[in-house]
Length: 215
Image 1 (spheres, rainbow, N blue to C red):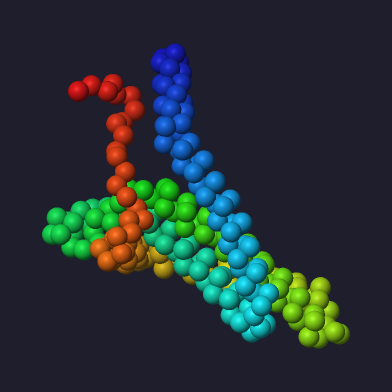
Image 2: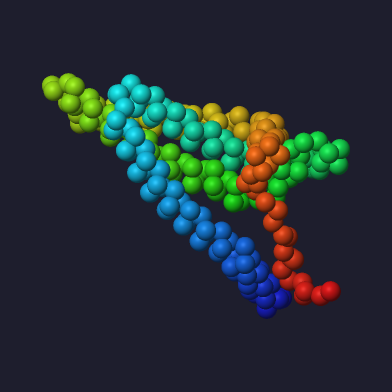
């Protein structure tokens, strides 16, 4: 009995390793390279632009960036928790956007990873750069201000808005996952129909593991 249990455990481990290698490795490599490139490019552009704007515009940009991070976090949670069944019924009726909603849910791992981690990390990098520029501009305008104290306060405000906003966003996403996914799907449908931009192309389904590939 113990030998059978050990064999089952070993088989599960082997299947898990095969599944990880075949499905995750390529995505991990691609998303790592993509994040590296986007982070460098966006950080360079944002820092160059923010240095030439007023302190008020820089502060507005900072808040907008924080809310973009919150919005994408909400989308990532919604996609990860939404059910595919309602959209199958909508797709059978040829409702615009339903097919994209199904593709979003079928690719929930990569989509949520991109929304929650990639966009979230980049938003954090840019908000940090924007905060540093605001701090520099304030120190140049007000000579007597304690920049260390202001930096701590500004970081606390940004962190509080980010954490509080994401907490609220998660509640909204969990309760309205279907509506959020369908809204995003309709945007993707419009981009493809009007601008010929297919952000989420069809992905061929691979055969299940543990089965031989037979015709």
